[in-house]
Image (tube, rainbow, N blue to C red; front, side, top):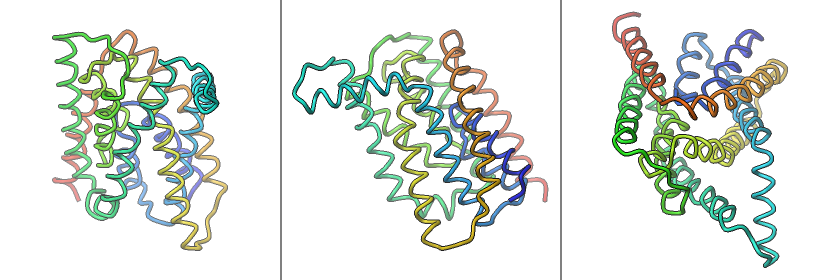
Length: 270
């Protein structure tokens, strides 16, 4: 892996992981453009997941500290803030559907769905889904808080991101809006929910890769991961500020335009 390739992929991952535009879809497209298929690319996937997970952990470190205290107080049978405890349970529950479905469908996704044409189709479908959620939100603005029932629904929306081209953050944010959360609360929950699933995916990739015993050049991977970490921090801060005032419509149009471009290239060029 060239150093320039690593920096490009780090930027792409850092920018797209927490925006509703599909990081996996973008990585598939960029890898196709850079013609990357070697084992170092697989290692890079794993480390990029750790880098972006580290970014969201660092950004929400105060919230996570509160949740850790809530868990410890509950285990010690001490009084606990019910809102914190509900959020902790909600994050655990919402993680389950993607884990189970991911384990069942991983081989199918890897073998058959990681193509540019499928990414284009899913990007377009995802844009329609975001459009629908914004339309429903416009008709009936909501201001609910996270509940265990809503967490289950958001967990299944998160599982849609197993398909390349469907944004994990976009699916969970739009899903949260449909289930009664406002944009900001849905986004905050989506970012916190990214931690367990992203760490889990990264760990599984790395374990599978180490079992193969291949030689890996870690230097460009470390550079790309560093780029991804700091880029993701900036994007998280930007998006949370953005979503307080604005809608998902810019990402809807971005997805439609990108889907059209990718579909055209896939169908009409060699």
